[in-house]
Amino acid sequence: MVSASIARNIVGIIGNVISFGLFFSPAPTFYKIIKKKDVEEFKPDPYIATVLNCAFWVFYGLPFVHPNSLLVVTINGVGLVFEFVYLTIFYAYANNKGRKKLLLYLLIEAIFFAVIVLITMLALHGTTNRSLVVGIICDIFNIMMYVSPLTVMAKVIKTKSVEYMPFWLSLANFLNGLCWTSYALIHPLDIYVLISNGIGVISGLVQLLLYAYFWCKGGKKIDVGDDHVPKPTEVAV
Image 1 (cartoon, rainbow, N blue to C red):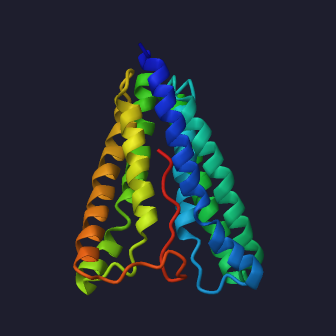
Image 2: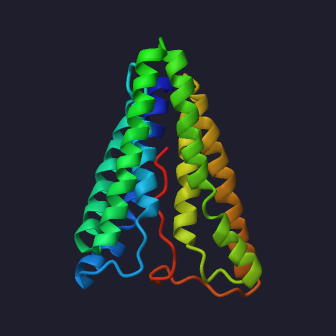
């Protein structure tokens, strides 16, 4: 019989693979930027937000904050690398205004992250208290990113077409949330990973049901290679 620890690790590894795919998904967009040597109307906001999200999850998974969370640390560490590569490419091809905006936002994030780390380490004692504070912050960012496609869903309902709905991204987000929800439920229970990813499962399922409904009614099928389809980098856990 497979132990809970082994089952948890297997599910976590599968979650790492799916999350890796999500982090890699914006690569074609940045390849186009490199080829054109211009960011055009591209906005780095989702990737700036994901940097902070990944940083907090890495911090959350450290042994002195929330023990036994190595797989949370590894995938979000990989995510940080991806996001910094994307933002470096943006910086290289953006104009001066875009570069200043990028650096300003990253500086604000760095200060905010440093403040939370200092408060956590100096004012909070024990992994239970630290997990509570950092876990809530992580959940807030995770939930924000999981519900971000609501604007696209509203557009689908309004136009009665799935043209602007990225099916594969919605499917990947659903599977990602499902995998990490399962991971969180296996002993030892991780309530903070469970809350945000449970909401992610519901959000992803609603997106897929909406897609299926309008696709069956004859709504235009999405072209996954279309440049106007938003391709945000989603959360890892």
